[in-house]
Length: 276
Image 1 (cartoon, helix red, strand yellow):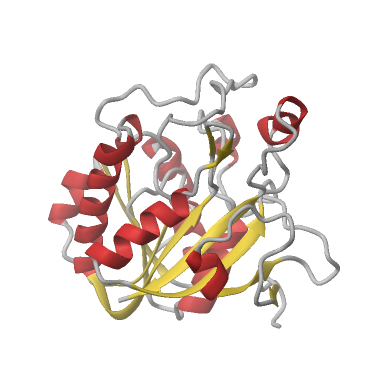
Image 2 (cartoon, helix red, strand yellow):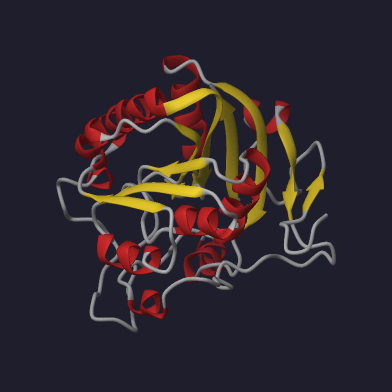
């Protein structure tokens, strides 16, 4: 392993406290992203980002370790990495740090995305609704890696930002896909991903990184729901599943079992790698 690479322990079954046993996690599991000394990568150890990011209203920016691992293992220097739902820019910044070109779209947190991306060359970003903006992009890309917007249909309470001016995490903008629920949400997400796939080169990889929520007192397998649709509707081929611990854990993750001790709380980010 080269210095500063993300370490992956190659195992064929998920960790014992992993929450899912779906066909993808059973048949395509490749490994866990964990340090060689057995400790977890921290999502807070974000380097190479603007100091202003700490002031963002986004309470949970993408955990960099999953994005870095995918970019360094499923693309090459000079390749174009695309994230249609860029958030504060985790995929793009990790791409730039690994000498790739980044391409991204963002609606809600574009100001922070712009600030982060200003630190690097070879990053191109667009502001607006990805479902509309993507129609004006003609660039062919080598890798798509993204975390889909989370809708509000989960057991998690409204999340508070105690440090900033913003007091809520929940989405209230009807232009945001995350505002949609259930089948309408999936219909819009898959239509967006269909347009993304038109930009993806043959043989390129489409990767989702998802922290499954809890709904109705059980894990809601969002990663499976999206993979099912990508596989059947867009004919993408699943080639691997990886996980990494969502560390540090959230207050909700730490306290939910005190109320409902028999629920298997999702503690990991699930990375599903598909190929065109």
